[in-house]
Length: 300
Image 1: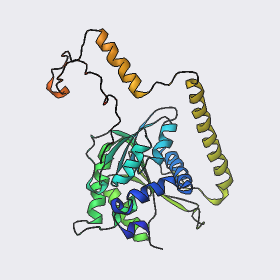
Image 2: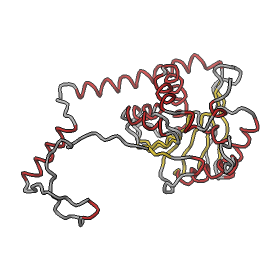
Image 3: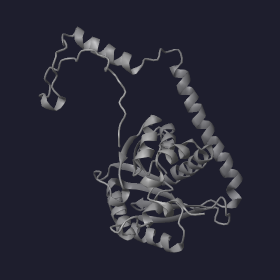
Image 4: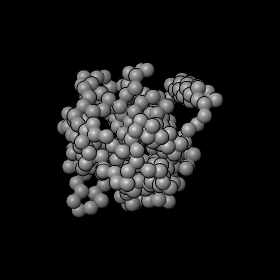
């Protein structure tokens, strides 16, 4: 059976149909959640602190949901427009960017506390066009990622290499970009459970150890504890909101507009765009219409 990255580029392979099929598959959801939980464990973010995390190849936001549950803020980048549209339909909390990671990032230095990536980096090993050079794309990717991370911090990649040569190429490009760290292999003697993580580090840090078969029962109970804790937090949040009247977006906007009108800011026929008004200038409230608070679909 051919691997997805060998069939077509990601933006082509994950079209509208495949994006929805992938996101709606419960088995995929479970596997993605398991690998994301492990990646977050290897990321070793400070406990009980909200971090700013980059989700590389965020897709439809399955990993982002776990970041939300842990109380983190996140930004997701992906090259497949259909995947990002599914993420918008699911109303994920993170900010989304349409971007080819092989072209590098344009984030400010030291922006993120960490980065995770699930089943993505192996796509950079294929030359989808004559202008694509895997070593150059990997070097540009790792160099700009290293710049965007704080010191100290980590970036954890779960990936599926097809050969040892691919592993060597990826790790050598990461090291040349300035990263430390190395490979973490969970359950190396199992064909089904074996998972490979590239744990890259900015600053001096110790590479964590992989899980082995002897720890399987402990790991399963720990995963159950994590899931139960997330469920308790979620239910606690729902109880806190219980009894409060849910205000819809349109009601909230109309209420705000009425508040501003009572302060003397009446509507006018013409309203200048915000970039044409002076900072601090009195801006009139637009009149209500059938387009007020209308939900607009974002096109990537």
